[in-house]
Amino acid sequence: MKVFAIAGDPGGAQAVMAVVGELRKQQETVITTGYNEAAGLFAPAGHVLDKAVALDEALRLLKQERPDVLLCGTSVNGRDDEKTFIQAARQLGIPSLAVLDFWSNYAARFTTLPPDGPLDALPDVIAVMDDSAAEDLRSLGINTSCVHVTGQPAFDRLHTETPPASKLAALRAQIGCPPGRHLVVFASQPCSEISMKAGYAVLPYDERDIVQIFCSEFKTHPAADELFLWIRPHPRETPGKFTRHASRHVFAGMAGDSAAAQHAAEGVAGMCSVFLLEAALIGKPVLSLQPGETGLSPLPLDRLRLGTACMEKDIRPAIRRWLDQWRGVPRIEAPPAGGALRTPDASRHVVEELRSLARR
Image (tube, rainbow, N blue to C red; front, side, top):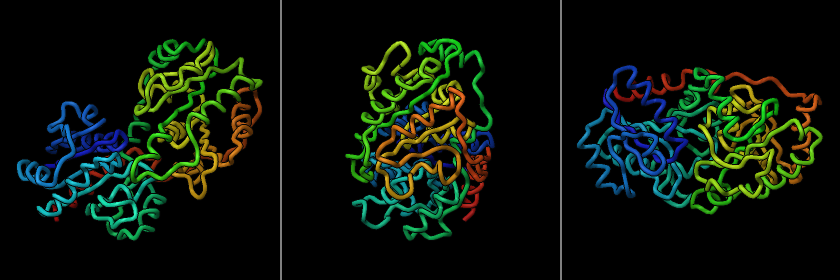
């Protein structure tokens, strides 16, 4: 089987690359094609798309490589080259599969038109993380037979890879966390920036305000002398965005990789970044702050009983309660639920779906 893989956004690229790794382990042929952040994640990529690809170019590449099936991420970044390749594959009779990596912006991932336009870039199969994502897609009118629950391939590593203790100790030293302190990571994300882009829902909160409030509560909390705070920007944020909050017990900036940061932390807070969900899946206490959010959060911590989510406009009490755990004040939480997210076989399940498509 020959697979043509394409991705742009980092989340989708990580999910696709996990499947690519499984395909290569099974000695299948894969051509990787990347743009934006995915170009670096795929390096060396078979094709790097330096500018938005037109339909004619996508048709040319697919005719040149002659794959049995198309594998792609689901980007919403203004280019969305995956959608062009899905449309090209449809014209050529090549079956396609898209790997969903997050619980948000569903319609925008599968249309080349305004957000309320028809879903004109639907693949033959959408591999989704869990039943809640499947139900969300079905509510858009997407045919049930197109939506297959496989788990999230990028999460497979959470169940199989643990950074060595020496690497975690070196990371804590790098950010200046003294021995004996409890490390709390605040995982930021560019909410204020992405909400201004076409296709993204406007969020009712700003990450800069939330970081400011969190720092204020952190510094005045009774457990502050036992804690160290790491404000970790998202890869799409500028590293110096939060340096004004830095102090002797607060580090602001990038260091290490995400897996090391999650394992080094004793608790992880943030908004609705997938970083929080990954931390929860490896057993870290997680606090998701989404003040003013209505309806279901795109980060399903509550639905999966994996962490604490606060949608109240006043988030200060939730922060104080969450920080209480480090001064011996117990928190009552439901145990983690099971399901597709907690099994390390998502990549293999997606490969099985690809093989099924290739046999059509």
